[in-house]
Image: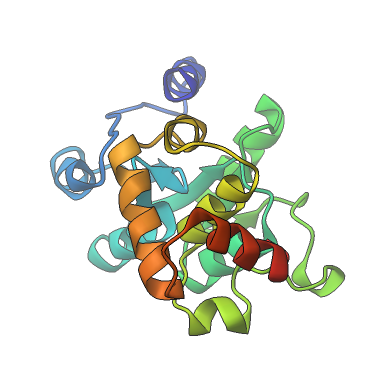
Length: 198
């Protein structure tokens, strides 16, 4: 619904022409090859995939294409990852239409645009995602996110619904988390989350 809403919004403006909508990572690069867009809007979550990694891959393979992350995550660590990946913009989904279009227009002028409402890292205490301990354990953002939701008491199905991914994908992430942390029980995972402030 959100995707269709953005398409409808941009389609009403003469300066934009939406050439394609894609919902799975394997379809993205072929779609770019076929439709040759100037600008791509990506979510952090693309059916279980990491949108930032995909954005980096797009820029490497199609350097003339502008890539903007359109996300619900007001998360400085993710914005930092976006910058490091060379992605051109980071815009929060709850922006007004005016601010969304302003950000897209800035990027289309060849500049970068990072949402002003994402608080700079220098003004925040370090968040668990991206901290040394998370990197040592090789935990991804998605895995940390799932750990937090497990600690909140959500079931696999509820987590899948919250993150817009399949229950099978959640189960796979949970298996990887247990393997990386060397644990086998949900209670141990919750204890880990509590101890590390997740």
